[in-house]
Length: 150
Image 1 (cartoon, rainbow, N blue to C red):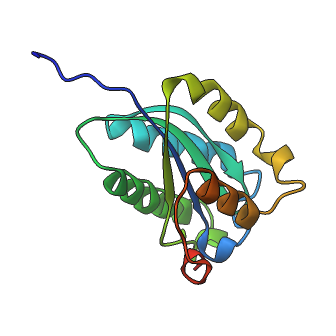
Image 2 (tube, rainbow, N blue to C red):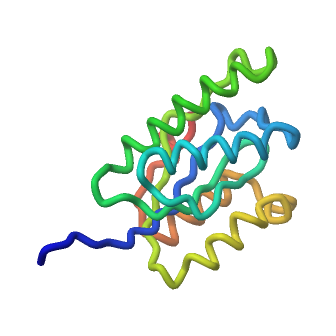
């Protein structure tokens, strides 16, 4: 085969350190745009970035030449530096150490984008912890509650 072709849709999730609600509504649109730019510069296609004050979700068509941990590291380090330049309130900002990444089929892209777009409404009745546990269970990811949160 002369070409290498792929469609790898990944749903990433990570939260602020301690799930602190540091990401106020005023900063989120610019942060999401910045994160999407980091994703594109890494050679991936960003379908959506969104979330609420304590976490973010990503719908990303992943490149076939990189790895997930590398991209998440780029996202966290670049956005932390960027946030700290935005206002003194972000001087101590940090993301949680871990992340979740789930693979989905291309037919699920629209549903995932809709889910990310509706985070504000979704989290009126559900905490991040409940949402995260649901995803881990849905995708059969074994976890120990003692080590999920930092």
